[in-house]
Image (tube, rainbow, N blue to C red; front, top):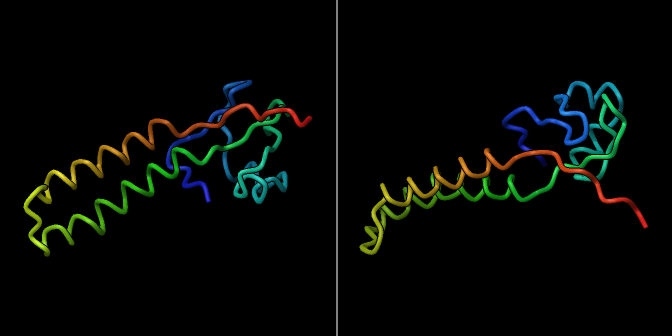
Length: 107
């Protein structure tokens, strides 16, 4: 399911696409299933790819689960601070790359 941390903009018209607009047009389920849906503003097909959400999820896993475990297990090859910083960097990368893309036409 898309986390939708920052405002998503249509790659065609650059207008912000919100979950409220998608719910009103009965397109929210399509958006959540990562299937192409029409932009509420211009009607052209867009899709929310999974890559950025995967990065955010992995970063959260590292910061919230692995960092305390590394501290508890007293792992010597990496410090908890380094692992936490890595997780935060991954989350930030995921947030910065989160965007809608143009949907590929069906053949």
